[in-house]
Length: 110
Image (cartoon, rainbow, N blue to C red; front, top):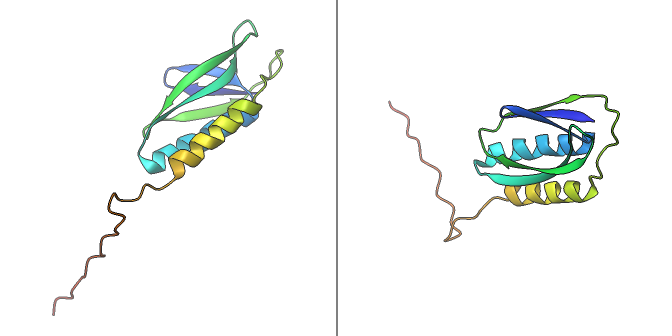
């Protein structure tokens, strides 16, 4: 499992969820947008809880491997949700008139 540090707290989750969160944070940062992720985490007593995370362009997140006596949370549904969020956030939004501005023309000074 991995311990994810985010804002002023940490949580324990599966390796695959932690990795998917890092990918999502990188994508959100490149797109200057925000989203909310819901991920399964392991509480202090070993109970599985859903943690909601607001991710925006300035989000800083890290994950570190950690041994745990508790089993990893089931993460298939969360991985699908995170992948869908990443695809949705990663899609480039077209201009309303679907036009692309002309590149500037630079003229050399003589």
